[in-house]
Image (cartoon, rainbow over all chains, first blue to last red; front, side, top):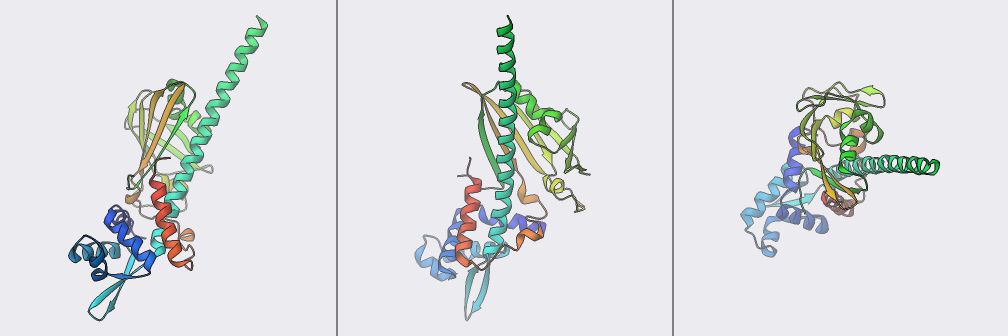
Length: 121
Length: 153
């Protein structure tokens, strides 16, 4: 994956209309701009623009069907983003759990020490 | 829900803010939980050295914000640290911001890592060939996982 492709995926997914279109495509297997225009409260022109953005990010591919372009989702591109972001999130969860343990162990150790000191007095 | 190239996590810690501040800014304490910091020039603009499985990372990070007991932020070559086999022309780096707030009974810590969109490669090659045969369900799961990963834990 090239630098610009990574950026394109994030930019493509940043827009709620594009996420909605992608979700529809995933649920239905494929779709066309004209088909979406009859169901969604946005113009066909705007839908085409969004679909092209998704296509440039590699999240969908377009097949020419006569005068129409039929869009098909590409799960792999999306999954690689999800997997990767998920791994980084998991790393942070792991680190923060370790930080918590580190601080708690230390707090417990020092309070035990205080107790011992108290007992000796 | 925010939707951008960032990860946010937060957590309550039952110790004073000063104590957490030390744990997140001192290299020997970072080693106890963050794991990869091997050296640090503690000043704004100062370098942070990283290592991964005892291999030093050739690309240092840099401290960007020091606001004692409140905010500590740095850039780090996270991808280079975990992939020492790759040589980079442009060092890929992300921005980590740790914020500490006083909270009843302790400290509320928030960490935000951002800037993933500027990384050169999203996934190591061996991980990118995730099975495509599950088709649309996999596609929907991918979208869901991605959206969930954007939610604040």
